[in-house]
Image 1: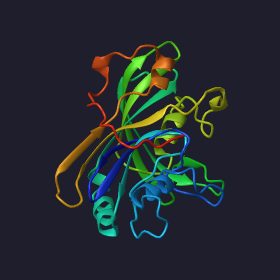
Image 2: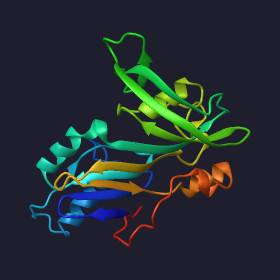
Image 3: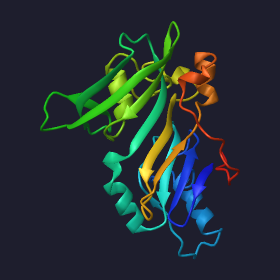
Length: 235
């Protein structure tokens, strides 16, 4: 679903199951393909384009920013370390600390699996802050601030801490037992690439998460305005 559009940017709430951009084996079931068709209004020879600023994993859901020019892309990516990125996730187990920051150097092997290394010369120092929003006997709902932005960072940090994300088929042993991965990009705050105006977009906790956790108390999640009626990315 498109949450916001102007002459420079598009902000989208990505459903799970869609890639951000295409691969050699999947080119059409992607947000990039759908939005490109949208800005071109179905006319393949149109010069209208969109550019990817950042990505979300296929099985994750939530907020993505796309832009309509290379200059807007350059400006947003240049300020990306200052962009506030908040996620929610449901993880296995009971966490000892109600809030903490997980830090490690992350690297990727030839099989595209990310892991922590003790050698700072080989990995990239990464930080993931979390707080426990709600806890059941076996699961916890976390609100996560992504302080750095490495590939699979949240998934790896939580899995290596002993609390893998529910439904994570790569980093959790029982990921296949669940419908989808319980990771959602809930909020983004950034400066508009043209006006410099501070912009904040938020979404609610997905229904799937509340099915896992039971009722989520309203006071425990970030407030979010209702989404305007916009074109929907169809599954």
